[in-house]
Amino acid sequence: MVGRRTGAARPGEAAEDTALALLRSHGLVLVARNWRIARGPRARGGELDLVMRDRDGTLVFVEVRQRRGTAHGGAAASVGAAKRAHLVFAAQRYLATLDGPAPPCRFDLVAIDGDRLQWLPGAFDAG
Image 1 (cartoon, one colour):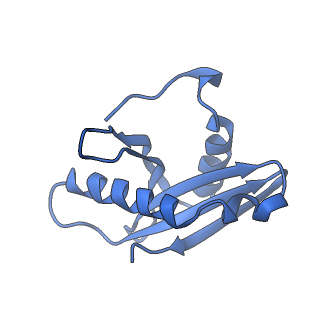
Image 2: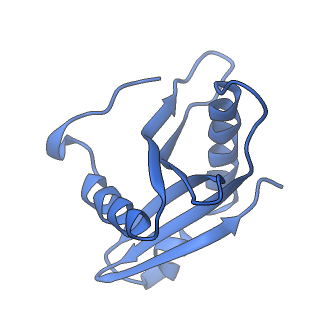
């Protein structure tokens, strides 16, 4: 795992802070932030913006996307098939670090378009 950069050096950090506050207000608990798997000669890299635990024990992998507006489909539309595949790959690697059987999981999206904040639980699945 690679550590977080600090301050304004990390683009999107304010968006992640906003998403984290929203999710916490709904009872989710932060497990990890900016969890990364490094690139290697035969491995793709990847990052999980937020890993949360829902009240029912579900592990939630949260992608945070921010756009200035809804042109070109907006933040939610920016998570295409390739990005979803990278997220699933990173989530699988994250789950491999846990002891015991994998808990129930889901992939959520927090989309920020200008001033509009939208949480999409179960935005996509691993299949």
